[in-house]
Image: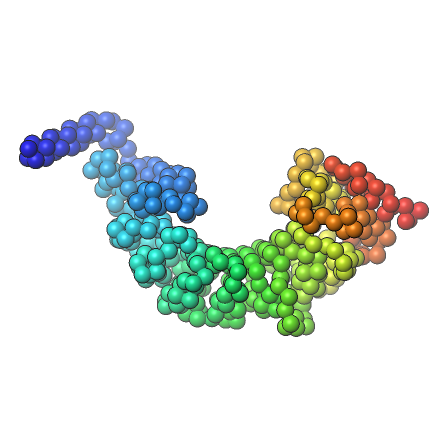
Amino acid sequence: MSHIFAALTESMRVLRFCRNGRVPIISRLPDEILLTIFKHFEEEKRLNGYDSHDDEYASDVTGGVPACLVVTHVCRHWRKVALECPTLWTFISSTSLLWLDVMLERSQKAPLVVTYNPFSISLDNCLEKVLLHLPRIKYLELRAHSYNVGRVMNLLSSQPAPMLETFKFSVECNLLPTVSISNTIFQGQAPLLRHLDVDYCNPRWSSCIFGGLRALCVRKTSLPDILSTLRCTPVLEQFMLQLQLPESDQSTLIDRVPLTRLKNIVLDGTSLQNAVSLFEQLALPVDVKIALQLSSIEGPPTFADFFSVMNKHPDGSGPVFRSLRAIKFKPWRFSVQFSTSMEINSDYSWNPQDDDIRLSIQFYYEDDEVRPNGPSAENIIFDICNIIAQRKRRTFFSGEFESINVEGCPDFIEGLTAALRIEG
């Protein structure tokens, strides 16, 4: 019986092969066109969750099967073309040792893109095997449980990373103190590293490993540590700092940290106090774009203090703001934007990425944080517009305002008119 079944299976395989060979489109497409189709197919499958790191259980559901595997089961020609393309097999996130070995073998020496979340990390199996190929990894994204951090750091310090361009590392448990990243990681050799994204980790490298960074995203760190890191990033262009800076007894640096090539700086979820503490330590370019999300503005310092420390250039010059826009989203969220253009988009949104918006400040409160005696939208708009009306901060507001636009909240109007009345 088994012989009959095997014969039928082989007959079906031969028939499928003959049928595929008679299809003109399949048999006549040039190899380069096929490869383009395969790459688009693999990317769509991967990004739509077939083997996605955004889904904790995706790899379990698919058994860790590579997204591109299906194209090798169509016909011999397609299989040959797919297997001869190493870049089709470079996206590593499988938790299956079998398919991991297949991917590593078929990718040959091509640069790898590696992504693992805390639910798929197996230190004794997959991760150790992948990090043996650290010298050819160009993109590395790891999320580890706190109890695995020490072992992960040892693995990351076992070899240099000469091809690494992007490194994202986060610790899953945020109840423990931040993890220190030392100079030993990648053995201090990552010459192509351009993008660093760390969560609950203190980057304390003092070596040249930071020298080529273009983008830096840090969450949960101390002010002295982040300033020390920024001193090692002379060509940094994008900087994002998320969550509040914890209190620190360490003294900050005396000299301002020069970031002469910085294009964008984003502070997300910080207090006005932390924003003032950071900006008074930085010397920023004249054309830098600033986006803030402030979670707390109660008590000192004031907005006058905030604007006074935003000295963006060593010579004291600042950008020319021509317009201001205030918008309100919900009872506990509103924003103020300073634009270089008189033309302000009337869409009801907050868009700090807009090229014309040089400064974006969004204020947000949780419901239980809104206190009757706390700062209101009216008071905030009053404070900001009062600074503009008095024209005392010439290093920051170095031009005449042509347009002020308010949307969604009558308190904005009250604060604005009250501020302007001070000038008579």
